[in-house]
Image 1: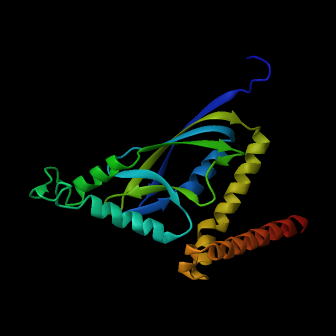
Image 2: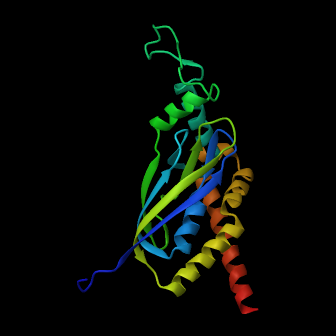
Image 3: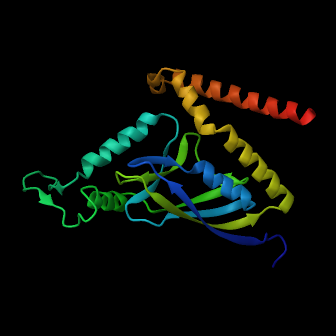
Length: 224
């Protein structure tokens, strides 16, 4: 290997997620934990779902109304039992494939219209995402399902000690439950505040204050 080039390694794993029916499951924390456990410092991560009735999407991670609107729009776009031409002039056509119920074929169509695979950059041991972005597993069926996600990464791997440190941080953040913190922030503020800059700044301030509290708690614990 030429001088200056860093050694690249691959990691391949499968994660399982239990969905609770049609809707979204934020899988970002689990993926970041996997990145930390595999000591991946920088590189590319391919995320794919091994099913034809659910999909992957990157979208809003702050205002839950965004996900509700996405779900409602998709249901309107791909109705159950039958479909009609866009111009609305032809008669409704019933789905031929309905072996598993009225949500069977619509789930396949919704999956085809979205994504079954995502490729994201990894930097500093975590996914490179925007401030208000999260990776979601989008369940298109009514019933609960066990869904399998394949993670295939290639990139620079950190040293063992550094990897262990990243893993500990990731596990600690998981224990703190960042999603729950975000939920609490939303509950304490007017949901309509997201429509204005003032509302967003208020929620960001609350989140930053809480992060500072967590850091202070960790510093205090390390001194004891």
